[in-house]
Length: 109
Image 1 (tube, rainbow, N blue to C red):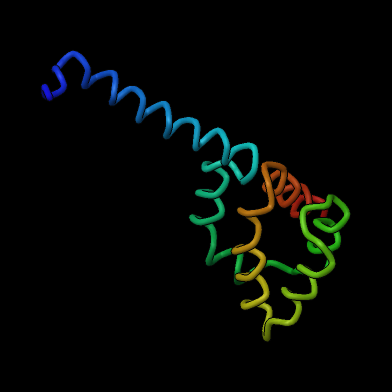
Image 2: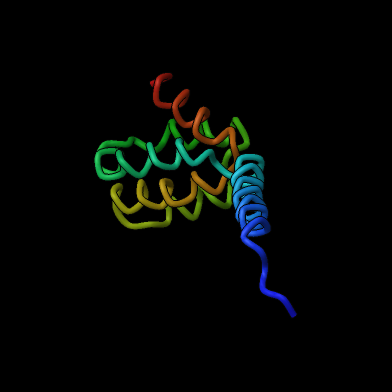
């Protein structure tokens, strides 16, 4: 069996890049955009210290970003910092609209 030629390697690389891009696009449909995830990550400590959850959670419920069960799970954590961290852990998994809904909730306060 012959080794792959140099000409076939770029094609293989192109397929790998296309597969990675497809994975990012699928995430964009199902999960939060990577740029939005990065924004949450970079501001995580400040958000965890300063968020006031009561209105924020209601807004996210209203927009179907979280469920009642998720709200209860967040509120079951002891202390506001732990509750905020739980919300920040959950948000990136809540779809492509989660970041915008979160920002709207912050601005509506």
